[in-house]
Amino acid sequence: MSRHPWERLLAWLVDWACVLGWVAVTAAVGVPLFLSGATSGLSIVALHVVAAVVMVIPVTFALAALESSSREGSIGKRVRRLAVVNSRNGGRVSFGRALLRNSVKITIPWLLGHAAVFEIVSSSESGSVPPSIWILTAVAYVLPVVYVVSLFVRSGRTPYDRIARTTVIKNTR
Image (tube, rainbow, N blue to C red; front, side, top):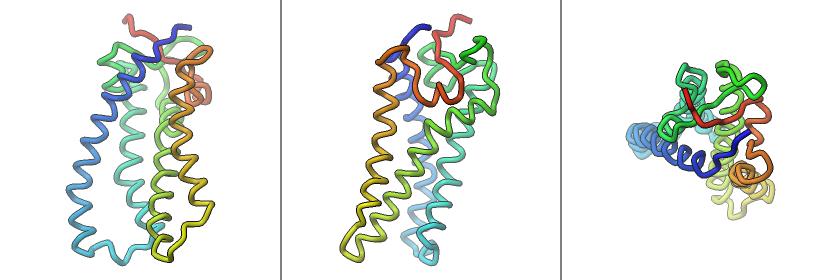
């Protein structure tokens, strides 16, 4: 199994530049709605659900669709000539497996981060943020760090690749 940690990090940066484009589009709509008071009646949980539905879920599904397509990779992976494949047979990854991979990679840390931010803002009005929220914040940051570190140790397979039974290879096709 070959390792390409720097290539994967560069691919990740390209992908996140694309994701930031999506965030900018949603912010162009969401910020005026927030500032106008249109969202003032929504609870913290409702705001979190809206953020997940508008930002996190589309990104996760788009990455899964790209990785399970005939190109076998996100835009960043294609730019860096990498492919996501089934770790058992080297074949194309199913949409379900790609969705699992990106749910663990993207959705879980992002939703934990969103929950932490919403709760910090909400509880800071009362003057103190509970320790559980700081723990949630730490987990939201530690997960991506673990993912990056895992690229550089042993086989270079990340926890989300192991869970989804995928691997990232140099695309020679």
